[in-house]
Image (tube, rainbow, N blue to C red):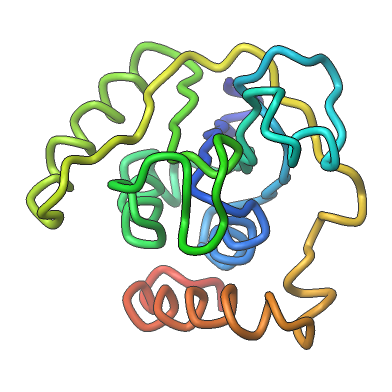
Length: 179
């Protein structure tokens, strides 16, 4: 999608709270919206997605300025902040909702995603299992999921899971962070 020279990327790599916390800090990223995609149930709730019966993945939809950050750069960050070799899980989070997935918006994004998987395979001993599939529908998550890490930094999941990912990301991509 392109609007006023802005584009969108829709990515899933485990808990959407983790992805939102990282992508929100990148220069050129204007909005990161947690939500659900890839499933069969319209307008799912978080509770329903967590039953592992909807086939929806927890995703983030990123609105960005391609003059500042490219889709390829977003994919580089994506592959550095989660394990794309574990099927339907990230750490202790298990289920199809936590799968590694790239929902592409057009054929250009599809080609870039396929190229990124091939490129990043060299860094993993196990095969990358990231799905590359066309975006059908994106359903925004409930309001209380938005900016979860920023709003709840002292919650145990935020301290023990999200914060280490954010710190690793900030160290690796410090030149790409917002001022």
